[in-house]
Length: 582
Image (cartoon, rainbow, N blue to C red; front, side, top):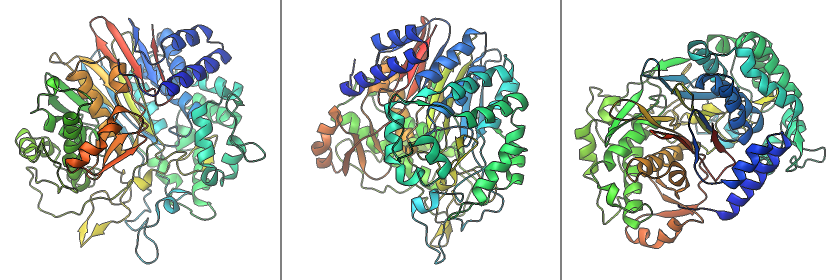
């Protein structure tokens, strides 16, 4: 078993034990400490999420006879409370869902939308130049119409078993009673004081009177969020999209003192979750399925897997030079196409089939030399397509926040959902006890270059391109065998691809696959995870022509493998998550 960051693993086990014992879940705490960093096995159902309290909340719903979708609602609302920096009802999400009764895969798009008053010049200054990133992020300008809560409601109406109010209740109780601040939240608060601390509401909630981040082990209550949840529990999403909660959101966005935004109550009331066709790509004996545009995740993961399919990965060593070089090269090629072609398909024609066409992929794979690195940036290819208009490549920046969780219920239904408020703490605006997203900064700040439009430019009602890659893998009999995904900005794509290769090509245990050190190239530098064996390859990779950067690559992979012998779950040791089941 590959073991990374032993000090992190020990710290994670200690924090989990303290957190769980403090909430009366001592048996689970003891079990998790005994197996911290190892895969978890279960026979009936399982949850793998980014915080132990969220995992346990989801399990409690499954134990009551709830479906995977029921558990999803409770897990998300709990994460909103205990991992507020990453996701919540102020943001958006993509759901990939396998319905065992129908033997069908559905993908729901709960991505945020640009306000109807937005224009392509939203992030340009008076001289027509792009704003600096955080000048755009902090405040109301970056806030898109949130979609997460409506996605939860739509999915529950279709596939839920338990009453909606019963799914909201656990998060209300936790918000009233509080939870213990962990190291990860404390560190995030400390690092963001100069930004998050500028919002008076957020400062009062997350920091002490003298301006220090809430200390590790202190109890953090959120009665304001509890009141918000009481309204949602009683009336569904209506108070958010058509009532007092939404009105407060709009007021916070429009009244920001230095960077007001354009969101209106009409934008909220018009918001709709969209069912999109899944994007499924054949890889070895499997179908790897995920979310299509406006997510670039499934297409870019699919391209990378297609480029890899001509190589005998099963005979390669995971951390060897040749393997790392190959993963970096396919990343360059796939991200070149991503930057030019991918955006919201409701606004831009996208060659979805062409980008994963086997002949096109084979031609692009011919660019790869196993003995030398392609110079970057690699130009985009020309997939089969009837579009003749020229486009300019995107330059948008996606920061590594977000959260992912996977659920399998007793009936074999599978949830793979990635959820976000974009960057850490989103727009740094807190209202109703939750944080608002800065998702609009996932659009290209520059709408055109050299007279050519950027596909991912701002347009009214448009959904910004995402890299979120919630994935479900089906076997030859079209039965689910794996659910996985990760946070991490545009690096999500590389994290998920490497995990898929580890499981499908190397037949690795899901936890071992998640533990593997990361390598990703997004058509620029080859990034290697610091503190891992891959960092030792820097010199030899540079000799092949790579520009190498060794850095922290903090994924948050959470996956469940479905086997004939039961469920096997894994949680990323780089964060504080946990997989558990019965």
